[in-house]
Amino acid sequence: MAPIQRIRPEGLVSSPAFSHVAIVPPEATTIYVGGQNAVDAER
Image (cartoon, rainbow, N blue to C red; front, top):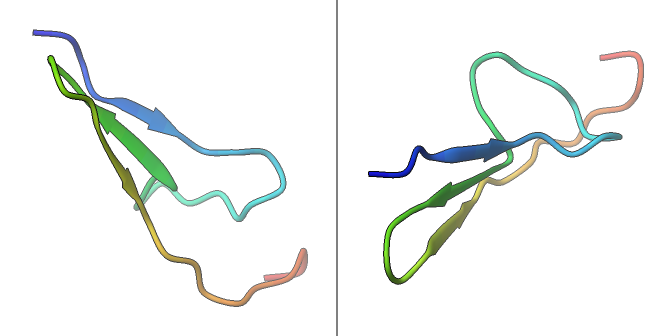
């Protein structure tokens, strides 16, 4: 089985607790897109 791809786009807050996007294989690819809290570059 192919691994889950976790994507953390540049410019978005980086957290070891979650990924912004997870692409789950196989066959019909399912893409889960996480929500965001309002943050700025200082938080």
